Image (tube, rainbow, N blue to C red; front, side, top):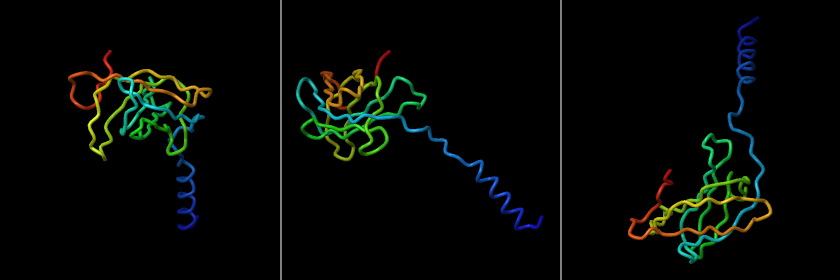
Length: 137
């Protein structure tokens, strides 16, 4: 076998071994809603949902919260929706805006295909510095 043929064969075998390590995208449902802090719509900021499992099998979801508290959440990018299931919801400052947000504790929410509009209700922690408090076990 001549040298060019060996190179082509080696390259072909190398390409066969190449694949994507990304898991397949799970089905999603559209999710939008309103964020309430202490019973009032609040924004702007970032709302993040984290699944209970940290193995990466279920993706996180995030969305920008508008000044009126409205948001749309996505797991795989703009317009992708969210995988159904249980999540912890966190609210944080949008670092691009550098606005102050009250410190809140995460709450548990469930995303269901038959409930595309959700209300996330958080309570501020009085006397805490601006930001987010991680969950306590």
